[in-house]
Each structure stands twice: as structure tokens, then as C-alpha cells.
Length: 71
Image (cartoon, one colour):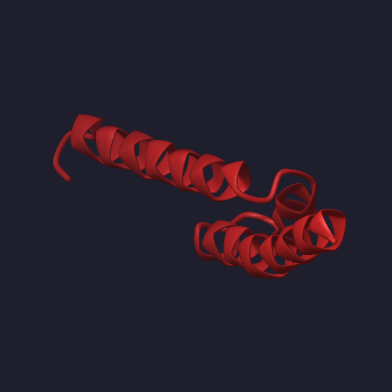
């Protein structure tokens, strides 16, 4: 009985976290399906990785814009 509950929770987390991870990545110009697959492999952690990558990329773009003269 415990195993079935654990399996159900794991499958629900896959159905929740994988699409969220793919959506975050897609909004920042990354491949949805690649990040969706990553979300299937590492369900909870993948959302934070996708957010970290997106925030790092945005910070790099802002830094590059600030360096351009006359912008």
C-alpha cells in the first residue's frame, strides 16, 4: 500500500514539474522538450535549475547592454 502511494505521488510530481520546467525554459528561448525531459528525470529540482539558468542568462544580457557605449 505504501508503495502505491509513493508511486502515485511520484507520477503526479512528474505531471506537474516537467511541464512547468519546459514552460519556464521555453519562455527564455530554450528548447521546451529538452527541459521537459529533464523535468521528467529530476522532477522537483529541475524547476529551480530552469529558473537559475533563466535568471543567469537575463543578468548576462543586462550586463552586456550596460557595457555597450551609447545605448
